[in-house]
Amino acid sequence: MVFSLAIAGIFISNYVVVQFLGICPFLGLSKKVDSALGMGVAVTFVMVLASLITYPIYTYIMLPNGIEYLEIIVFIFVIASLVQILEMVIRKMSPSLYKAMGVYLPLITTNCAILGVAEINLTYELVTGVFSAALNGLFSGIGFTLAIVILAGLREKIDKLPTPKHMRGFPISMITAGIMAMAFYVFTFITM
Amino acid sequence: MKVKELALDGIVRQNPALKLVLGTCSILALSNEAINGLGMGAAVTFVLICSNLVISILRNIIPDKVRIPAFILIIATFVTVVKMLLYYLGSKSAAIMGIYNAMGVFLPLIVVNCIILARAESFASHNTIGLSVMDGLFMGIGYTVALTLLGAVREILGNGSIFGVALWNFKIAFFTTPAGAFMTYGMFIALFTFVYDRIVRKQKLGGAKILKPKTTEV
Image (tube, each protein chain N blue to C red):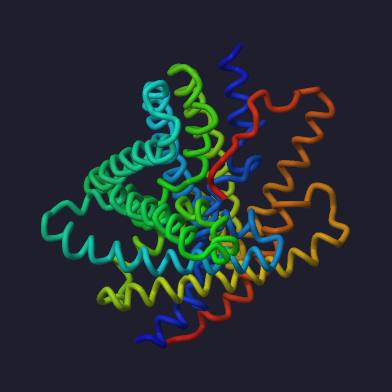
């Protein structure tokens, strides 16, 4: 199960290039490999924590009490508070970690990959409990980091090339992402 | 006059999908068919109008320090409303149920759609109620038009049909894949920028009147 979750999360249904989750930081932030890696690690960390918290809240509190229609409001509040608390804790505990990761934390609340993993955990057939939900968060985060780092590396090179005026910026990044998506499409032929 | 400016801003000069490039996740995912794009556009427009309305009513009451959580709470409420409404309508008509299922996880994800928070932060939180509703409407229309057009192009090329009506048997399956989504959208933005620059140069349409939204979403 761990293996299936890993292969599915990182390659087959990669959050960025296959499921279109977290495109905004993917296009907006990934111009340098270092900052892309920092963002990826921060997102992965929050994804695991968000899965660990939202899955039990939904399964053991909201579902038995028949208030599952509040999921959107509850999830976004859990994620927003989680990010806020995390920022304060990291700032107090480890200034060096805060320097590396802290700047990305406020951006994470509105990253759709985080709310996406919380929502996907509820319907994903491989997620059967809190542990597998956290694993799904971990591997999806690794997949996100992989995609964002690859694109950052490509863009570092592309920015130096002569591109037509109207293709600069977003269009050329989209085309690059499209070529990446083609490469990732090969993984859909894997069956487990 | 003010309405005309707002309409031009929302649909052309500040088009959320083609000029500001916000809310890309749902654009890429729901542009596989024209009808899905239209459905997503309608849902976003509804949330945008309602959240702009409530935020501009409460703009003097919400303390500045907690405004972002307050905005998110308001937006999340309306997204829940849309989700319940679509589910109810879907139980009456199979076509709407199809759109509801196609939206899937992207329906709750309207909460973190950058356009809505960006308009709340940059427009509704310091403009009157009427203007804010207008802004929500035109931004929503701009988003819907772009998303439906993109969906139509991908559906015609990839599926040989438009709005579910079959046209011919010539199909390029590439356009239905994620790679096709990225590339078609990229070409759309490039084409829009090209045409827009031409028009601005010829007619002196002028740049955007409203400042580029400072958004917390990246």
